[in-house]
Each structure stands twice: as C-alpha cells, then as structure tokens.
Image (cartoon, rainbow, N blue to C red; front, top):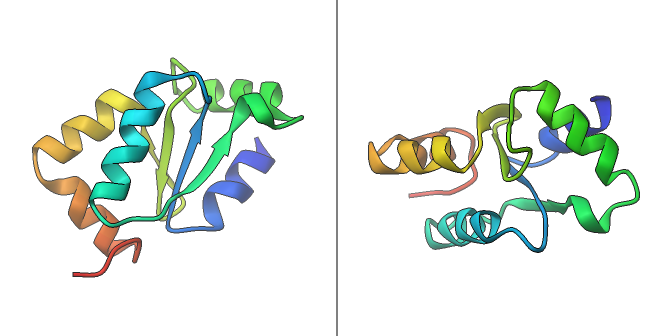
Amino acid sequence: MDRVRDLAAKKAAVIFTKSSCCMCYSIKTLFYELGASPAIHELDHDPSGRDMEWALRGLGCDPSVPAVFIGGRFVGSAKDVISLHVDGSLKQMLMDAKAIWF
C-alpha cells in the first residue's frame, strides 16, 4: 500500500494500468486529450505489480485497473473518471492539481 501511495503522490495525475486493458487505454487517452501528462504505472510490467494490484483493491478499486489518482488523492476507476468528465469536474480537478493549465 505504501508504494502505491508514494507513486500516487509523485505527480499531479497518476494512472495505474495494465497494458492489455482497453479501459485503461481509454482513460489514458482521455487524460492526454485534456492536456495532462499523467504518470503511467503498468502493473503487468512491474515486478511489484501483483502487490500493487492488491493494494489498489484495498483502496476500493474493483476492478483494480485503471486506478486514477489526481493530486495524490484516489479518484476511482474508469466509470468514476468518465462520470467526472461528463459532469465537467474532471478538467477542474486536473487544473486544481496543476496537471493541466488553462
């Protein structure tokens, strides 16, 4: 859990993903289109990936990926991020965390 929290706090926007996950790809693309450059941590390419996946589940992320953190705070998974985008608050969250500038 500590490694997940440490990685999540290192950048304004952090996404934990798996390379084979289509929803992970969609969330990464959304962030790029909004102008953010999130830190991407591919759990299937990390030797500690399995442990981080369990830590993410412990935070309430089920499925465990994509898991999105903005400003060091756990935001949620794909459905949560898409809901925030649809209601217009995702962009503001990214601006508040200094992940994008407008």
